[in-house]
Every structure is written in structure tokens, then in C-alpha cells.
Length: 245
Image (cartoon, rainbow, N blue to C red; front, side, top):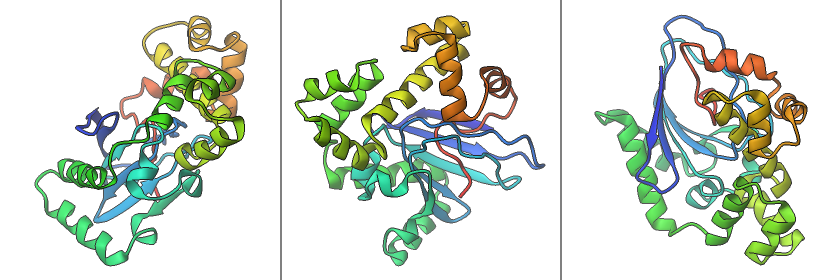
């Protein structure tokens, strides 16, 4: 069972997931431009930004808690450039001092509510790093609103090369890829809300339904019909980051 809710950290989402006791159909995790900090079975993990669907599948009965950062926010809080974690799931102990990570993981494990304890940790880390870069927030906001890369660069006052370099560090890939990922997520949200494929494609910024179908195959490895079938199943997986590592 999967559940999520808005975090006290601006733009972030807290989520929990408990895998079924018996193996079930694996749900691929689709790109969304985000990074997650996860806790499970005494381990802290980081899920980097994806450029393609990440295979689902969990250990039967395993419980997970996670915080999904807004696009561009995770690298500053965790101190790790996003492109170094692109399409990867990494133990936090491989990135930070092991003793520090083990102590924090143990505190979460001993808490009555691991998800709340994980969120508290993230809030403390965010307080230490300060507010997110307003330029990067603006980049994500412009692209998520359907602006072109060129218009976004003009709006935030960056040259094309600067925008690309800063996007790699913040989002894990260049602005063109981020724009495609965010557009796909907009379209899929509309489909889940009941829009037809054609209407969702146009509203999200695709040229037509065929364009959306191509993006779905390229970024998610699924047809739209297969995605809808999985989305309507009884045990959905997190939409942004795999619980497997």
C-alpha cells in the first residue's frame, strides 16, 4: 500500500509504502525530475533523477518511508550534484560518512513514526543549507508551465550554456530533458483525472496524441494503455522514485 502527503518542507512530498506479503506485479517508476531520500529496514538511500522508467519490485512485506524533493531541491539539501546520481539508487553511507548515516538511520528506526522522523531529518538538513536557489525554482516553474527552454533562459537571465550547466547539477539533466519529463507528468496527471489521451496531450503541450505516445515509450517504456492499467491496479508504487536499490 502506498500513501503520500505534502511535507512541511516547501514543495516536497512525504510518502510511505508497504510491499504486499507475496510478490506482485512490478510497477515501473516513471521519471519526474525529482530526487528522494528513502529509509527502509535500517538503511538510508538516495534515489537520483531518472531519464527512463526504473524497474519496480520490492522485497515482499518490506516497509519504506521517503521524502521526495521538489525538482532541483534535493542536491542542495543532500550536498550531491544531481547528475552524479542520475538513474541510480545509492546508499547514503556511500556518499556521507558512514558513522553519521548509521546513527541517523538508527534514530529513524527507533522512532514511533519513521516517516515523520525522516521528514524531521530532512527539515534539519534544509535549515542548515538555507532556502533553495530562486533561479533554479524559477527554471523548474517555467518549464513546468510549458515554456520553451529559450524562453526560460531569458526569463531567469541565464545564457544557454549556463542554464544547461546549472540544470545538470540541480536536476540531473539538461533543461530540454527536464521539460520533456515534466510535460509527460502533466499529461499523465490529466489522464489519471479522466481526460482522453488526445485532450491530455494537447493540454500538456504535446503536438498531438501520437507525440504523447512517443514520449511515453521513450521516457517510460510503456504504452498509454499499459500505464492506465497499472495506475488502476490495487497496489500502486511511488510515482517518482523506486523503493528498490
